[in-house]
Length: 126
Image 1: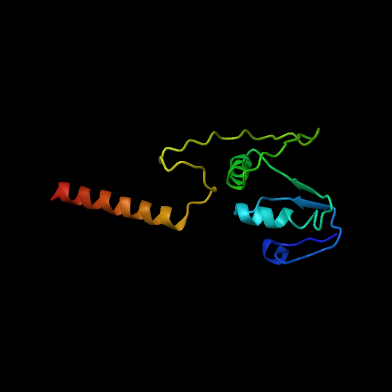
Image 2: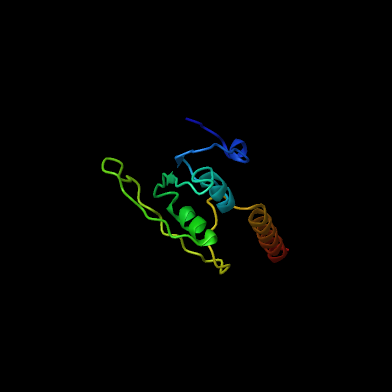
């Protein structure tokens, strides 16, 4: 058995690695492909299993979409989700679901919008 982080997993070539298990999803769809690419090399078959919770389902759909994949889901008895997936609404109009953390650009835009709103309020009060 081998346990590796995303950083350590890059460049690992293990002959006849039959299974890769993702206990958590990588943030990047490209990293997901690198992870599952550790199995099934050189014409061999392999299996990749990813544990996906209700909280990470939207991110898993993003990975599928960006990689042009449609992967089967299977619920295992005794491991049914206890939380409910929150529907993702894209109110920004940018056309997609991102990860759960805001990007640096999103933070800068939010800070600029807040500063503009505060500046507008101070002008009203003058």
